[in-house]
Amino acid sequence: MLVNMIDLLNEAKVKKDAILQLNINNLEWTKYILETCNELNYPIILGVSESTVKYMGGYNTVVNVVVGLMIDLKIKIPVVLHLDHGSSYESCKDAIDAGFTSVMIDGSRLSLDENISVTSKVVEYAQKYKVSVEGEVGAILNNETKPTYASVDDCLIFSTSTGIDALAPAVGSVHGLYKNKPNLNYDIIKEISEKTGLPLVLHGGTGIPDEDIKHAVECGITKININTLLQVEWSKGVREYINSNPEVYDPRKIISSGKDKMTKKIKEIISIYNKNR
Ligand code: 13P
Image (cartoon, rainbow, N blue to C red):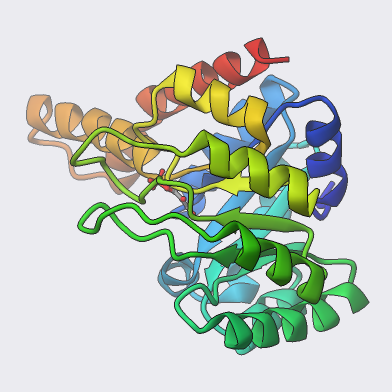
């Protein structure tokens, strides 16, 4: 069943728990993630970046791939199809019109007023279709840059002015592999959680030690986004396979040779998060 993320987030928040967003990169990844989470009866948020939307063919293709796989694989768990880091009102609208059940509008590089304005516009459109909206405050950048930290006051103004369902504040994480040790600010997480009352999202989940994740969840993180970790695991499997089978050219064999390492890692992460319950 395709759902928005409101109930999943609220349930996790009450349990002081977090749910996972795993990003998809192609059809095969979508299949592996759906099969694995279904086997574990673990509801999942499928994150799709704009570059993946483009890579896969467009919003309608992504929706049809996900819906088709859910029917053919008899997926029973709740699944959220979520646009990750939507860069404009138009891209969020395109995702919603195609059938995404959740969108993130990332206006964090704009001024606070501009961020509020574009996010509110997305919320107004999304609510008509019961689509959930995640907003961002205090840009969470990639591993080439220093981690940033959101202003608690800005988060409060942003959340009350926009009506978002989840907030991704910059709390010290970065996207991609960490060059330095992750330095999450738990005081900020706690304060933003208490003041806004919103489910909080931790971007850049790859490379954050389990204990840090656990602590962040205790302080108010309700959703954790992971992409790079699965890319690393999948590509390890593919590299090993190609190196030991240089004569193989069937793309189905090559692509699926990353499956075992990737699904093993998904099971491992889910078991860590289940232990938090
Ligand atoms: P990583 O690629 O660092 O795991 O981050 C994923 C993410 O935050 C997607 O929004």
